[in-house]
Length: 124
Image (cartoon, rainbow, N blue to C red; front, side, top):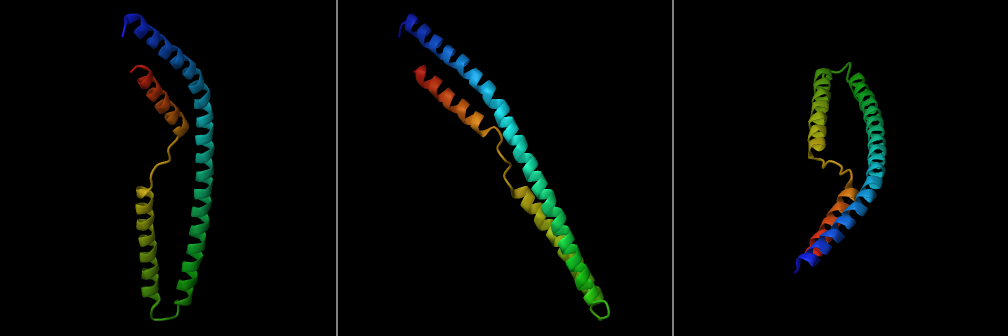
């Protein structure tokens, strides 16, 4: 390859890169807004689920303890319910730790990856 053709190739690649930078500049705020909206929705849903679940389970446990109040199994029932809550906490912790984090800026990452592949092919 001659120096002139190599310089033309690099000039073409640089024009391509500068053109794509403007596209990235438009894509970043869009991706950021989508990631923010998704995070807010997930947090609201998670908080609502947690509050509703805790209230439901708490009242269910109080009802079970109240049912066993005048029986010889009162202490056993109370400790069993406390153990169940501890087990639920451990299971919840394991479930949270095993989740994959959400991928923000996925579209931008894919665009950059495709553009890099195009540049590599253009420079061959």
